[in-house]
Image 1 (cartoon, rainbow, N blue to C red):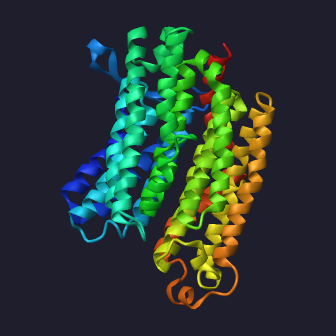
Image 2: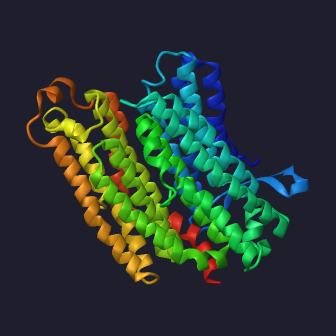
Image 3: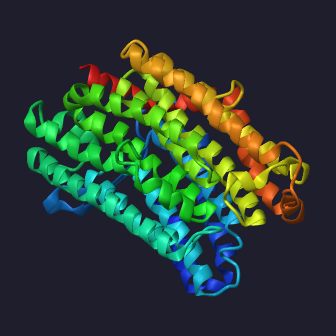
Amino acid sequence: MNVPWLTLLWAAPAIGAVAAAALPRAARWIGLVSALAALGIGVGLAAVFDTAGGFQFAESHRWIPSFGAGYRLALDGVGLVLVLLTAALVPILLLAGWREASGGGRRAGAYVALTLAVEAGVLMSFVTTDVLLFYLVFEAMLIPLYFLIGGYGGTGSDPAVRSRAAVKFLLYNLAGGLIMLAAVVGLYAASGTFDLRALADGARPGPGLAQDLMFLGFLFAFAVKAPLWPLHTWLPGAAVQSTPPTAVLMMAVVDKVGTFGMLRYCLTLFPDAAAKFAPWVAVLAVIGIVYGAMLAIAQTDVMALIAYTSISHFGFIILGVFARTGDAQAGSVLYMVNHGMATAALFLTAGILVARRGSRRIADFGGAWSRAPRLGAVFLIAGLATLSLPGLGPFVSELLVVVGTYPRWAAAAVVAVSALVLSALYVLWTYQRMFTGSAPDEVTRTVDDARPAELLVLVPLVVALFALGLFPAPALDAVNPGVAPTVAAVAR
């Protein structure tokens, strides 16, 4: 008997979401058990995954035969590492948001249910091989995230400002989705199928204006989601106004669907158009790398600073995707995982400090090390990871992106590397302003060190950063065969 493991993977959080909404008094434990069940399934899939490559654990059922749409699931190495990232982060985020889910009322049940609903949508997006199903999930995950942003604000957030940020997030992403829908319809009209593997094997439209327009339609939606400069403007507001767990869910998990979509759909389905427009996308990515780093330096709000660093890091990921070399694309996929872990550690640590102090202003935290050395150590490690210090996960992925990009676009690789100087500036300067020196009375009175429950959230992220930095081979063994078909398709 074939067990539908990929269906169970996304169904575990989906069923948990329904149960949490129906039983709000037990919502926290229902959510944690459901998320851990998804993690267990993901780890089990990784344990038996064949690193020789190809799609595995395939499921296929009739869905809408008249439209050529089916319930098609399969997992390759790229999807596997992103499934593990998602499944590992969500239990941590539920623990980090334990306070938001306290009280047992409908609001608590809704918080857990919405988080699990987002997880279910993200997991399905990484394993589906049907273009129409991917589009539906791609759009559906916006709704629970919109309510998480607008309904549960972080420390110091203004309800009116938070509502505007949530609406801006939704409108930007819906606009991208509508343009993508037109491209999806055009793809079906040209090929007669939504089966990703059939399209990749030759059923896709040939070179020409039609392929160019479809590519741009998909790219626009993914560029908004990722986000790619200049379509990034919804991200800082949404991240600052959200709770830290919701901000991490958005930046470390949901936004990865955008960069995953560029690799899986833009390059696989439209290789000729991808080759044609790749230099222009690279220019936007490099601008985003430098722009995000420069704006991060200028921030006085620690949460906004971390949000702008993500814009810079997504520029690296997108640059590697469109460099269209094996090293660059493998580095980009690994960068998605490393960015998720580093951003989660940085944002959650900052969120704990902001909740203690009651302020997001960097200037209000001088000398915090004397009161919170463990939080200071986690913040420093996560910050050093974001500037790609050797020994931590992002170093390997950033090195692969630069090495893989240089033969294609030497100037872009050089400019991207120069941005490391800017990242060192915003990380170390922020750490200096927040943690060094003598602590003022307000910090001494309000800030204390990490508690056991908070260490339970932060320590696994630190361990993961060191593990991915010192032992990246297992992840790369899965990723390299996953990106090889994309590289080959564009080369042909």
